[in-house]
Image 1 (cartoon, rainbow, N blue to C red):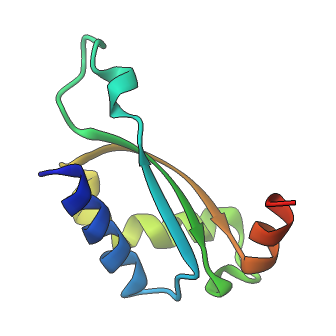
Image 2 (cartoon, rainbow, N blue to C red):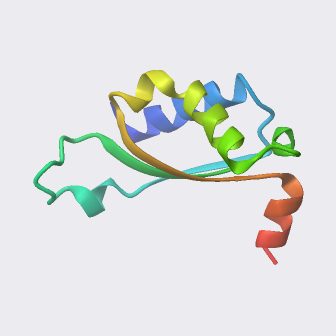
Length: 95
């Protein structure tokens, strides 16, 4: 699967379950291509901003995202790091 296609799927799957103010999915797969265990799956980093995260713990936020992407976490996506922020947290991080 091409990266752009996977990025679109990720955005769609996540927006099906939460309100998305901002999402950015970055590919850092190239940093792992020389590893002996590399099997070609994507290594991704994501920044996700949603008002739905208000009052949720970091673990609950991540669980929500992993649940939305579950079918891709066992195939196309090898690793996913994420920042899950409320709009206020995101605003503060940009200052």
